[in-house]
Image (cartoon, rainbow, N blue to C red; front, side, top):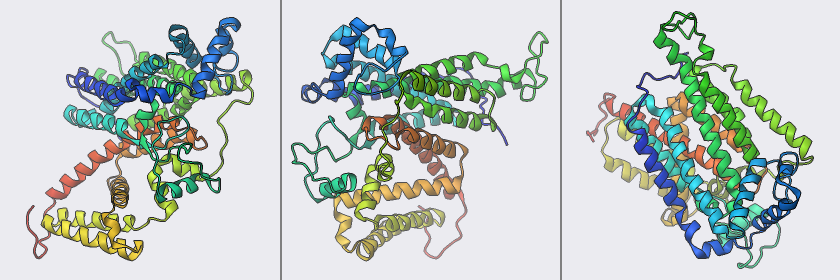
Length: 487
């Protein structure tokens, strides 16, 4: 199988532009909740924040070195996060309880995450051309900053006080009595980034992802160097390749300077939050995509991950992810709206979306008029809403129409995955599943920050594959069906 390496020049003139735009997009997306006084007031008495500040006060007498051999800065939760503790302790010493300044740190770090996310996507798609890589990378960043997810305790209160809220509450909390609206936990999903910024204890997620992305960028550069560098020197996969002075150069040592920083950055990410353990699975997937094999370097990530788990077991006995074995949390955290649709029994959008996709294919494949697409889609959706949903007017309700859009995107993405069988698309699917593993039994919504990025990378990749498919269908000769017209 052919390795996915590139022959493009080392220097890119579009990448710096994309980095600046991605940085600006990330800062713009998180600006309001950081600098809005009313939003900040919601977090002034947040229990997690106050517990961390108390841990900072205690550290003035007990010493900060204990975080390397014991529990982290928050006394009320058991985790091994020494670097996150040091960061929050430094913030406490600088600003005390002025939490808005803590949020500014989160805001700036999120801007850096957006920039690195663009670079990661740009590198993956650069073999398609720099213009395409710029477009897809920026699309991934925009989707990352717009992605919505569930809310949780202490997050901005946005409520739906109608039957949908009641159904959502029962699907989530079962038979527990529903509290008054003033005490009810938020039930409507909103932008994950919006909720991440003012909840500054979530810096553990932001900084762990920041250094994990930096690690993956260095690893990607190393993986590409294994193939491209020896090929330039005249060898095949590095075997028998020689440098300018005639000295043998093994492929496994090509670009080794990128591997060591990659492992170091991964270790830093681990020490911010154990969420970075997902890189133990993401890194081999990246290496497989680039080289179609698992180099020895993949074991380095596994070894560091095992070392972190061992240190946590030794220094913080009993530490780990809170166990909530209810299966419904898997779907609830992975995709709130689709899970809610299934819980309530809203099924008609799925056959409706499948029919619209078939019509879309036929219109493009056989050069039919777009009028047939619009008319056929409308009639088919009305029919499904009546026969399966029971009420044809569902099509005109915003929430039901939104479900139809989600079903269309979901089924369309699956069709692209199955038909196109793109190596990068399936690699990103594996990465997405890997970053969901640490959150399957966790109720904290800030854990969705990592999955939000990989959902967006996959969505951008599928959008490019769908566009390629659409163009290919347009170039396929029409079979001359009766009534076919050129669109």
